[in-house]
Length: 184
Image 1: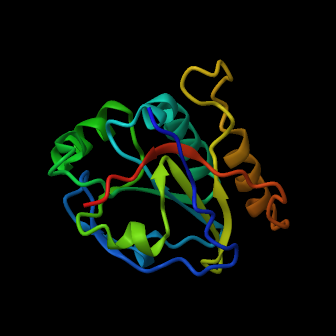
Image 2: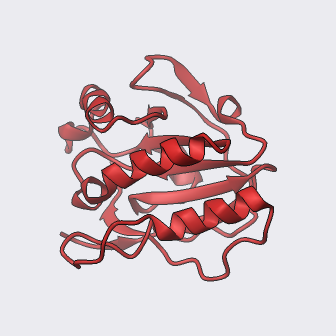
């Protein structure tokens, strides 16, 4: 299991626009559909990555908890489905239902959105503030498969608590670690 870190897009970067199909609703979802007066979390995930599987429950939990506080969530899968068919849209829908995702699970077939966000791995987390400027990017927490650190979501939770409070972004932002995005 190769470990790939986040690229750490510069803070303050405007959220790149997109329109992608949502595998849950079978409708297209645009960045503008995900607007929030508080914040937006864009997550690059996939179905097969052990790093994502390790944190799926916590992702669902955080999305429900912070969604109730006005944070909007969306997940994007950009993996090459020719070589990784388990990451295709039909299975994305099954995974989303199984894990009670309360957010759109978008399919980036062209991989253009992943490239625009400079996403590198799954999972990769991006938090944008009310001005659609990058506020946080990096890890969910320090837990990884097999390292015996509990999955708590503490890094992402800290960022979300601060953005809700209108505070400065966390000073110490650590890259996420996961499987590389499977580029075509």
